[in-house]
Image (cartoon, rainbow, N blue to C red; front, side):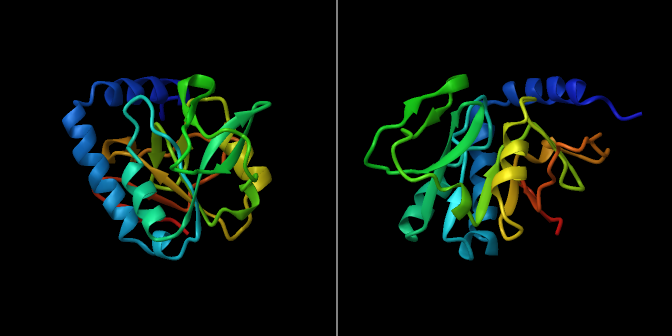
Length: 189
């Protein structure tokens, strides 16, 4: 029997929390390089990313390379219990937002409808592109109401976060098109 989302979330959050900082850095570097070497990066003009917390795979290399390649980088802000992606301006400071996540001020253009690719954090992914997040459903709600068929959803995690068992899903859950880790890229459709 497949463990519940809550059991998997708790188990993999603990594993990730205990990941030594050196391993986090090296594995994050590898996962980011895998994304940067993919067509998902080269073909995207507007990329939605997350600001990492709690030992999530870092995204700073992707942000830097995207800016150097004249791509638009967007980071999420939580407003009225919804994710809104705003353009990231490296000359402006980020602020500490809800849940202790750094986010841009909500003063620039809402970029939700412009995103070519959204790099999504997760606690657990399966081989079908299903994902377990922190349990609030922010990203799933965002994907259902703001992304087009042309938006590529990329789950970014460590290889140990990709499990063979199928995650039990409901109608609110949205699958990733691709899952990228420090060791592999799973193109799922």
